[in-house]
Image (cartoon, rainbow, N blue to C red; front, side):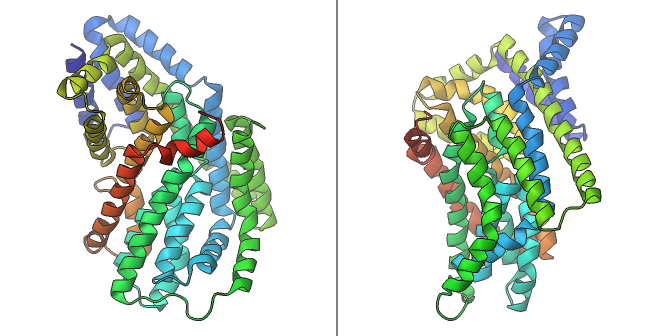
Length: 433
């Protein structure tokens, strides 16, 4: 019964998504459809409403709207150019200097803004003119831009990791944030390595001349205020100075002051940013609330236990189980956004990995890494399509280069999955796990 209910949920969800029904409504309707055979309509609807309210009432959830607002303030605050200049001064001597700069700046800006698509749009626009002047292949530039942008979603502050913390029943946000650094940097390094290889094959050189320490110093001083946001917020959360929610409020104040000092935010633009952030936050918070219905239905019908028994019935080898999970998550990520996918798959897979002793922090980073790949894979692949639009090229021309990046990023996924120290090392050193 539990497995059949799961298939019913997935079938209804896929049909509704194909019909264009918003994801939050699709999740709620699919969950109620599965519970109706065992519970009356009036009881199930009232309980669903209660679960939605409970899901949106978590104090930790307040961090997401604040981080969204901070990210939007950073997007408008003149941060991207300073980060691009800093990375160019640091890595510009490598072959394909602009490709390498794009990848490195995406990791930094994506972490600060909290949006892969925003990073692809902002950083891609900054480096495009230089790439055009130096004769870079637009399709290669678009592939580099798109492939590297999601790395920032793993580097804190990360709304995806906060969502996982809520979905997993309260996994430490500080531990998740600290654990996200190495996987996020690994993703970025994989993209930088591919960029260097492809640039070398095409004959794209780095910046000529000796290493310019003065330029690096000036670029570093210019970028320090933006980079300090990560130090202040994450340092405060990990050090126990404030909670993730309080840290998100600090990030808003810091980003606002920075934008005003850079003279890129006015009262009119600030109001537009607040309204846009409120709309985005409303969608995310409502989605999390509705997903609580799905969690309740799965728990009531004992679906996680049934899935666990089914997988363990196929094999008790934890490495094969993790491989199967990765394949499922990669497939789901191609047509589903990161947030709803986290809310759906966390209650399904987390109990299974706990049976063979995997820490929730490690699994959370595997989950988010997997689903971030969906940002750059068709048919959804929002970040990929943003980078193609910014790069003024086509999907057909970009995909051959993307295959190189997919291969490198998947190697990173394998390392994150099977080498627990990559995710657990920093949280363990900090005494958080």
